[in-house]
Length: 321
Image (cartoon, rainbow, N blue to C red; front, side):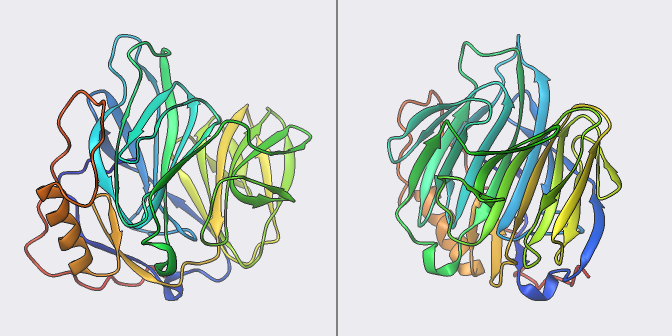
């Protein structure tokens, strides 16, 4: 997944000193960003009020968009390092190509998991013959220092485990929920789950009190721990919870994101995660010179140029709370 913002900023994220160690209810509003020719996304992370949730470092929600007469998602080849990308759809299809030779069409509620490791490049596009609507989320998971230079690879899992209760179907995207574990590879303790609720459902999800959590609303109206959460918004929940009350006002789709607080401070810029400004400068030079990130074969178009780095050195961020 790509950050196409041409005014990208160097951002410091992570570190336990910025984690809320108790249950809270912080409703995060999105920033609107254009992704390709006909797709606008609502960016929830990084956010002015919250930079990370566990190892989850980037969250975009898009659609549902009517692309019947539009090209849909068209993201040219671009680089990544130091992270995993998670493709998650409720409607539509996305064709993934990358520099390891992977070519895969990702469909609703199938996991497309790309581990960039030391360096990878990829493209994403709606197939020429595509469904009318496109609706999904794109997310990044930061890799810990011990694994951020692993060999790049791509995983596609069409069948994922589910947890069910009255009025609830929870699909485990990454990590483990109530004993059900995703086959997707993870490098830190975390959870990502898709929650489908039917109108009138009331239930409680079991949580790990050592994790911090947030819930992204994809569709419908649901109350999360008593707070109404509407599509395109995200509720940050902090740590210290053993369960999460959910109530659906209408049929609703949510995403539960959580994990052990990420101890390391990371530096994010454009589509890269490093540990210093030097890491980012070296990545930008490598992408500009056509080295290190490989080549995406089969995409009809030029790769994305990297944005300019800001002229001033990176400054430490202030505390969120």
